[in-house]
Amino acid sequence: MISFSHEDRSRLLGRLSAERYDLIVIGGGITGTGIALDASARGIRTLLVEMQDFAAGTSSRSTKLVHGGLRYLKQLEVKLVSDVGKERAVVYANAPHVTHPEWMLLPFYKNGSFGSFSTSLGLQVYDFLAGVKKSERRSMLTKTEVTEHEPLLKRDGLLGGGEYVEYRTDDARLTIEVAKKAREEGADLLNYTMVTGFSSDERGSVTGVELKDVLTGRRYNAHAPIIVNAAGPWVEQVLELDRPGESGRLLLTKGVHLVFDRNRLPLHQPVYFDTPDGRMIFAIPRLDKTYVGTTDTVYEEDLIHPGVTEEDRRYILTAISEMFPQAGIRPADIESSWSGVRPLIRQEGKGPSEISRKDEIWEADSGLLTVAGGKLTGYRKMAEDVTDLVSRKLRKFGIQAGPCMTATLALSGGAFSRPEDYPVYVEDRARELVKLGISYQDGLNIASMYGTNTNQVAEGITRVQPAHGLPLAIRLTLQYAIDFEMALTPSDYLIRRTGALYFHIDWVKKWKEQVTAYMAERLGWDDGERRQHMRELDDRISDAIGK
Image 1 (cartoon, rainbow, N blue to C red):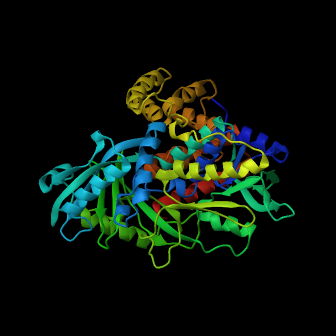
Image 2 (cartoon, rainbow, N blue to C red; image 1 turned 60 degrees about the vertical axis):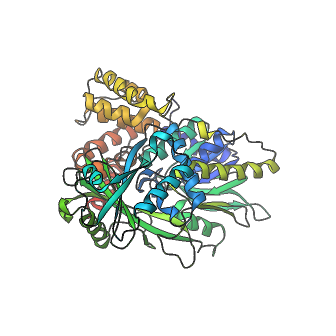
């Protein structure tokens, strides 16, 4: 497996100005990494730069679903539903270790957004548009069947329900696996590297980027004839560096999710339900937790750490109390939370929940290409559209690119002959990992998360040392994150490489100091750097628990 570490990052920065790229991508979320993968797989020499960690923005803060957007049928977004619905199957086939099919329950109530006929018809149309395979097509449930499936659901006014398949994912891990595959295909990727300006030729066309290493403050330059701005919520800040006054095209909205112990909200399956104000919200069980969200409010404040307000919490708690009154959920039951900012294409006269989630590509007078909007589910098709455009533009520079390969290209860790092989593989690898001295459960956790990269995680046994009281399972995954996932801070590992901050926050509190000490030793931090990274992690913990 190709190394993707802090040492590789340092070497790349050292030779950056001497490199000649065909394409520079700004933004290391799912859109940017998707473009880097598609482009590099076509033979386009690609550099990606991200001012934070990979997936640190919207791509680690979504509802964590690869889903078709059933509600967009109500807005007659037929093409969007068709496109992203079909992409669910592609993402699943390419990465079954981070994409898991689950039956979603859609209850309908008297005077609710959906009724018996509209639910049945909507799900039938949804199955058709998304090309859903026969075994995953919708079924309709009686009131009695709905309550048997989910006893906690409100009974008053319940008429019945529909059941259909959606795909749960880990959005940050999906992004990391895309980034790693792009690296395997020859792309160069840099996290914690901020674009501070552009270089241009005599005609005013952009020819490169001016960069700052956020960790050291050092300055660099990189050059390419084509530059794509895929910076998500920061798209317009990047546009301002190119042409001041270009902002105003996006509407940013915030989405919040709350996490509870599954003993407090013991759902049997994901539920998609109405809120009192007519929106729709997901309640999704994940291992021993249940998370609920999302909100959708206009947001114009801190994009890096949007935070969760008391109003946000009240909104979701009210929705839970309305739909699951028997659970008796209280504010004290919230274990963790996260919030993210969506970059939507502004549509006059439409509120946040009414705006289309379709993507849009546009070109500035300088030649800078920008992509915004879209959904996590459609990242691969969005990247294909952008890279098709890039390929056409590269021809005038004498650069020929191949066809798109990503529809059948397994992501890093997803090299299974077929998705159905994944469960058997996990159990087999777990038994092998036990031989290293870890528990069978830890083996299952590792194999299920890293898929066909599990052997590379296990090979870290030759590099890790007994250190700082960390269990072997943590040292193996931490060392792998350092060597092959360019994890540079404790937050990188505990938030985006493992998702632990959101779903195992007590575990994070228990091991945060030992993880930081291990990384300090391996990455050569001095005491000041170690304390700085520890403070940053403590801030993220405070954000998650709302203090």
